[in-house]
Length: 267
Ligand code: ADP
Image 1 (cartoon, rainbow, N blue to C red):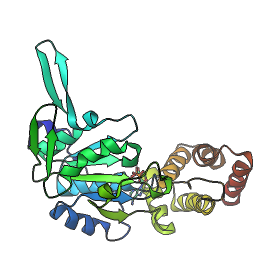
Image 2 (cartoon, rainbow, N blue to C red; image 1 turned 120 degrees about the horizontal axis):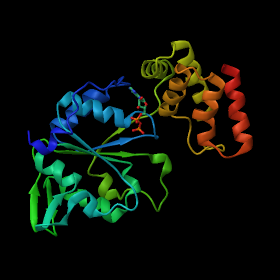
Image 3 (spheres, rainbow, N blue to C red; image 1 turned 45 degrees about the vertical axis):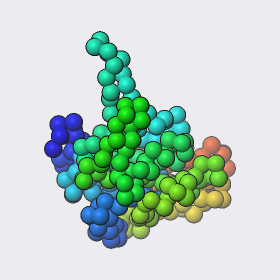
């Protein structure tokens, strides 16, 4: 493997608890180098899944957190000025394509559409990346794959993926795991007992039912992991839940009180 990519290899098995047949399906998708879209709310395990799959497949993983200020050059690369003059530096997408990594574009809709289109020639049968400024056409390495994450809940008409982008990908749906599974995950990730983890999950389920009724987004598995970690460190459960689960997701005093009340029914 090329030295440039060694830092991106994942050496230890990430803990990932499969929820359905996503591991097998992803393996099949990778075997035909199908670009993949992981759909689901924030904090439900998409990033952990792609880390696990990269480890399982023994491929380096280059992750890019997308944002609206990101330009095509941030992905593709640019000329840099140094003492000897100008030198080209590959961006993460070019690096992954050239040497054969999985390139994970997290929250891809945050990027502007004119940025996102740079992945188009890499995600159809051409599998090439034109570096226009440099005058080079990179033919993707056979190990290269693009993976994007996408939260359908957030989308507005202004911020959505173009159909021409969507239709280049296979997609897997992710959601918060079922009660017992999520309990197992929270307990494993934080060290709290199954009893406490189960109560945290119950609080989250209450909040998830309020999505669309005053809450934009429910309490995610990630938030439960934070709350569980605080409790494991000795923070009182009520305080941990208020800080890690309730305050971050609402500014509305009535909603905050309703969620605090939900916490007290379990703790
Ligand atoms: P996102 O969907 O935003 O990428 P993450 O992958 O970062 O979310 O998940 C947030 C946290 O939830 C992870 O760090 C991990 O602790 C936990 N998690 C969620 N689902 C799973 C799962 N199936 N197996 C193991 N951990 C999980």
